[in-house]
Length: 447
Image 1 (cartoon, rainbow, N blue to C red):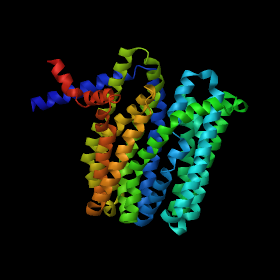
Image 2 (image 1 turned 30 degrees about the horizontal axis):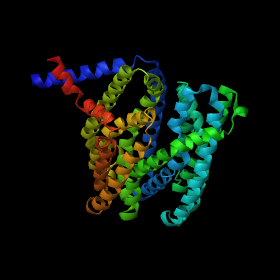
Image 3 (image 1 turned 90 degrees about the horizontal axis):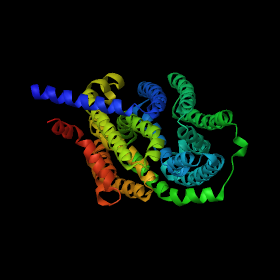
């Protein structure tokens, strides 16, 4: 008992020191706005999910999640892997803001258009006939995501307050509309149509807010040199992003085709409860990213920041996973009813993937700082291949739980184990290993 109490005290002391150390920077104040935004959106999204499970059948809920999973596969085409590249360029070359943003918008619009054509063809095989029209409408609405590039301007300027207010306002307004429609008996098509309108409005508002804030919309321009720079570097990132999305969402698509919409409903609810936590490492790392870029010139400072941040992310995820594992048998039946009791064991497996996803958020920025983007594809690609193969093996045997096991193994492989295989990624594998065993190391150092 005494040793247990001492261990707990050491762990909380360790986490408290990490928290106090990281919060000293202004970046964490910026992250505070993003955390507030995500907290509101997670809360409203959670309420919306509960309402859907109460008013829709399990099959309808599964069909809705299946369509969203298919649309998620389009993200690599619409983003073109430019997100972090744009932020990095804006930090290093603020005088070229007009060229950087103008070129990135054009490239993302082109990527979304080409991806939309590909998915239009695939929809004849993958999408039920009754949902094909609304699916095509959503593909058109995603073109507006090109204006999401403006978000990275505010990220580079560490002005995420602007982005947080915009996204939260739009999301909460449309979430309220969707809730009213569901409560009044509207089905999958109606909610997806409102989602399409939401995407269009958000794209338009990004344009308007940037115009009001920076007042240089007319100066946005296409730059062939900038485009070549982006395209030379984003190729690896597009492919890696596609691989990442595949091993994030392919399980739902495979469950829908190999088992049933009900299996998709159970698995998607478990993954949603797990994946909502993935927002936090993204927010924290995005806020610290500009500081890491600048710290690269000071080797020791850079190494210390990487280690502290990775340790904080790792143990934050472990605590979240442990708590969710313990309380899942209580809150899932209470919130969603007995019809969704199957979700509990799926979540208890899936949630542990967050340990590797949290650390992966830092790795994704690190490879850009180190200018080795091809390793993003190599690591994500290994995860995608392993996930597909394990899903083919485990889904017929164990259904949705098999998909969760496949996801956990794939995440651990792609985000940690594979890093040991390459000389250039091995330093980050060492950082992650130190993060995992940080409390043990700290106990020995105390002695």
